[in-house]
Length: 167
Image (cartoon, rainbow, N blue to C red; front, side, top):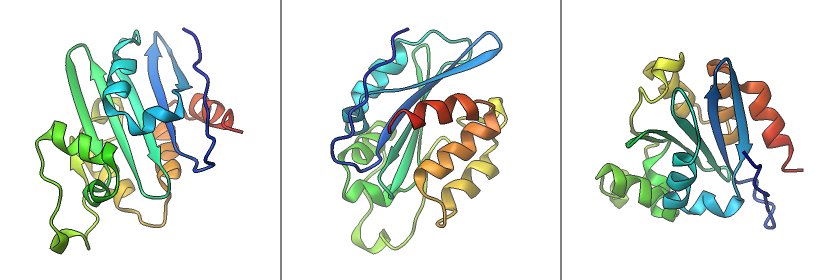
């Protein structure tokens, strides 16, 4: 596997990380930052990874929201931390479209609600209640939530090494 070059010219802190398990260890690397806005590109990248439990994509978008994508063969599971992000962010709209969920109306924009598969990581040790609690914690930034998820599942060190390469 070749680590792809990461470019973060706008300084926003957006990132897309891929995590996958090989035998008894996890490997995590960053995708090009442009893929934080390219849902189909993320799916394609995840499908290229060898893994015994599927590849996991972790997208952190600014201070606003995160997306978890899990690809195992032809199966795709998705979790979007905040449906209201779809009003401002194309990648969030793309996730909702994939899930066949409408973009929220103006009267629904005052609630932060997740969408997708709350049990996306349950078989790896992060149940629905924990994921819901992390997604609903408005004091945490998306990258902090993803770091907590990585720690809970068991790839926090590899995740942190990858994120630290952002400079």
